[in-house]
Image 1 (cartoon, rainbow, N blue to C red):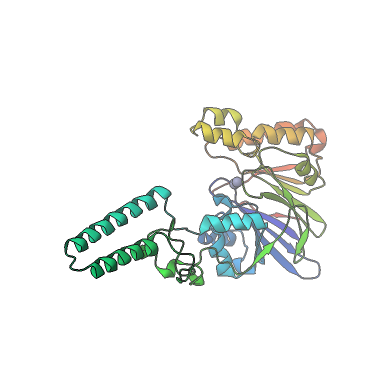
Image 2 (image 1 turned 60 degrees about the horizontal axis):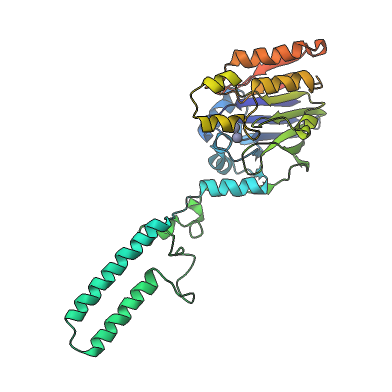
Length: 357
Ligand SMILES: [Zn+2]
Ligand SMILES: [Zn+2]
């Protein structure tokens, strides 16, 4: 049996489970994205009868917050591998690793202040100088201050692991060594039990489930959608995409279930509360799919093979579930052969009843 369960879908968190109970008795369960907190993920899993401790892996589509929010905690708690593309993993690590850096202006200010201090010291020493020997010593000490604090000699013996680059690192006195992930891995926010890399276009298997990742047009490092194949059933997940390029259209053929983005109503978005820059981003070819774009795919390109269609990643500000449903239903009724489709709307706030094959 193959089962697909949407735990959440929308800008506040995305997560689904693909599970396969094979005829031979094997079981594989994959969490697709971890956009809710670990606690909420577990709560929703229990709500739909899924046991978190039976998950085998976590698969990440891209590094946006609504897809990775509970990732590290969930993976560590369950001790399971996380599958990313390498670029997505790198982007995620950058995102979750705090870097104590200062701007050039801040560094210049600190440099000026230190120089003033040094000059004041020199003047104080000079006013009390009793011999030329003392003057020499003072000049040497001052030179050392400058070198140590702001212009390190390349041959400097300080341990690069324990002390970041002086020029743009944050105040060293307030950056305890314990915050350095290299010296204390237990506190590394990017630590995961294990990481597996995949490449878009190259299929791989997790237990009894074959996974085919494909590139989607979206403003992230290396975003992907997935087709899962298990026990002869094909399930596709395609959300967070600015438009439907031919490679995505091809992936959505011959699927038994398609979870497709129907993010916004164009008019609601145009008249809605978002700043213009955000509206442009959503509307762009690396933004999100509108109700109309999803509907025209269903009407013109979709092959009608899916038993279930799930409209997903609906915007709360710029869409209404009924508008998304009406657009999709209108598109499907244009083709009498598609009337058998079962159409669902995934929600942000509660899990969907599992779909079983
Ligand atoms: Zn996204
Ligand atoms: Zn998203």
